[in-house]
Amino acid sequence: NAGVTQTPKFRVLKTGQSMTLLCAQDMNHEYMYWYRQDPGMGLRLIHYSVGEGTTAKGEVPDGYNVSRLKKQNFLLGLESAAPSQTSVYFCASRMDRGLTEAFFGQGTRLTVV
Amino acid sequence: AQSVTQLGSHVSVSEGALVLLRCNYSSSVPPYLFWYVQYPNQGLQLLLKYTTGATLVKGINGFEAEFKKSETSFHLTKPSAHMSDAAEYFCAVTPSGGGNKLTFGTGTQLKVEL
Image (cartoon, rainbow over all chains, first blue to last red; front, top):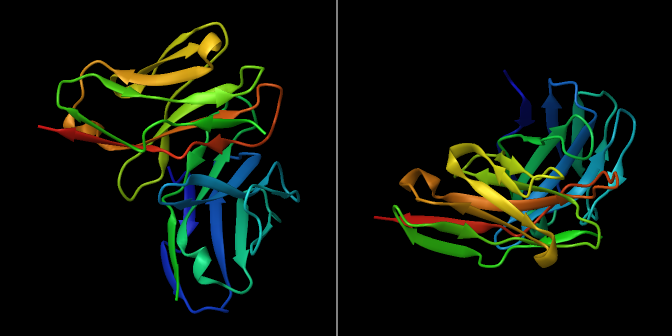
């Protein structure tokens, strides 16, 4: 029962480097989300997708890009990392909108130095 | 945009005492409401969710929440706190009219003391 799997779990980047975070779900969910969690700010939505080939901006999309080429995968990219992007990133998926439960990955702790 | 406000970023209770975590939503039309829990170094998991017609919702681990439209609130309670309840709790909202976003509050850290 894998559920939602995030790769990697930890990463340290230098300012200006790029990286991609991978989220994979095996529940055939349509909706996928990327959040960042910072102390005192809760979870803030970065980008989301309502199906394969679709993406949309959330509250804090600047500095991030996403792609959903396959239904089961949702990639979050940082083209030029900045210290302000130091955070814990969570991916979530759910079957569709409304009352359906969102399932979360274990998180990726990213530090940008 | 719909949002939720959680009053109190930190709440401390004694073991066996009542737990009350507050959540208020901002919407003229009641949205779908959720409570999630996050244990240290883990992702979030669903505690309970509001469905129309049932104002008192029961969730896992003895938690429940009451929806009050007149107060635009969805407070989370548990009659008797246990040490294992220490975690961070998030209220979340998604529009009942069919919106795609799932928006979270800022979270409340619950500490349970002996």
